[in-house]
Image 1 (cartoon, rainbow, N blue to C red):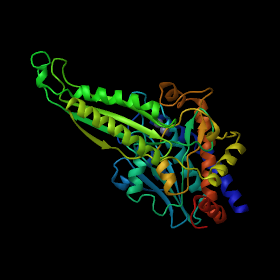
Image 2 (cartoon, rainbow, N blue to C red; image 1 turned 45 degrees about the vertical axis):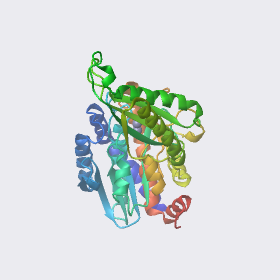
Image 3 (cartoon, rainbow, N blue to C red; image 1 turned 180 degrees about the horizontal axis):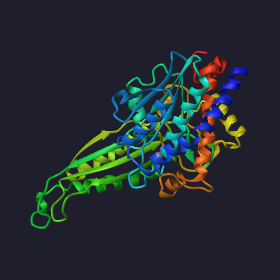
Length: 391
Ligand SMILES: [Zn+2]
Ligand SMILES: [Zn+2]
């Protein structure tokens, strides 16, 4: 065990010596926001940093052009540290994924420095398109998590929390096909695809009072027609449905489908629906998250129990990872007060001195947790038992 303690201190020292580089990665990504699946610059910066720290780099892993794998060591055990780096259209890094990327790369590099040739494998995995494309779901489907024993990631927030549930979610891409006609001259000839979308939203609004509290439905019209004097013959909407778990999600999706079908019947417009990837609800690994929490507390950032905190929940493709293998997705506080995510205010917080100090703490805690998994087989076994396998 003394050896592990030495490794943990080596990781802390490594983070301190790389602090400038870690903050620089975060700042560069923050000031050059790239939306889901377009994160080419971020991948370039992260992989060149990791290459300089002795990792083998594979870009475009799992057939995703902006995914990457940076590997150090070989065989098992293997721990993945995940980076997200996509921004939101319009609000830049309003989810602070620049910080996730910097923490992931920094923690990987620190664990590698401390591991220094001992058995085990550190895989820093670049997971693109968290916000809009469910990148981790694709990477899972394409076997990128095979042979990985556990996965770690830390998300910035207004609070430091060990575990916070997330909702299952799926997008419905809805298209209505109607028939164009002169809106004044021959409206009776037309089939109005915009009215079909409006009725869909009206139907959904009627549905809300009969949904369980955890269910949420939000949507936008992405194509509403071309001119007011032409009956719209082609309209599109994206409707995002969320619920506590995937079973609940399916029930709500079926009800939304009925609204779409009904709107089609009322107007005569032909509906079609495509489903996006299903974001699974997040599962905790208390053995793993409490270990991370212990190191955060030792470093001066005492976490609270996010599961006990009221308020709205989001969704994340880390949910799918957490259903497939032991994984944690704790949060680190980067703001002074309560700042909601997905806002310009949060994007500003993601470049603050406070955020930089906070991510260095979380980077250390994540590197130490990673080393415990790699070098303490009884801890790894407890984590696996917690998940329900082996041990
Ligand atoms: Zn996020
Ligand atoms: Zn987000």
